[in-house]
Image (tube, helix red, strand yellow):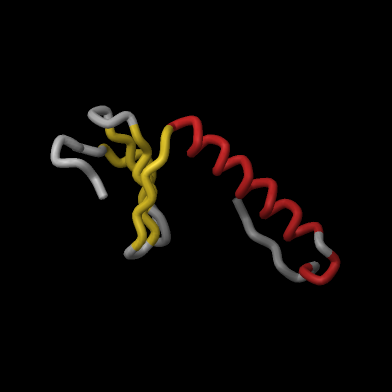
Length: 71
């Protein structure tokens, strides 16, 4: 949950996610539906890389050959 001083600014928004950066607490606020996760910029960057790697592996898996996600 954001602190009272937080005034996050939207960096990216889609139908599934809202990514905000808060200059007050220096955290990324990642909102997916009713779930909000706050993390440092460094943690968010590593998380994004890990999700990208996972998506690559999922698309490369033989049992998921029909799944193609456009990025």
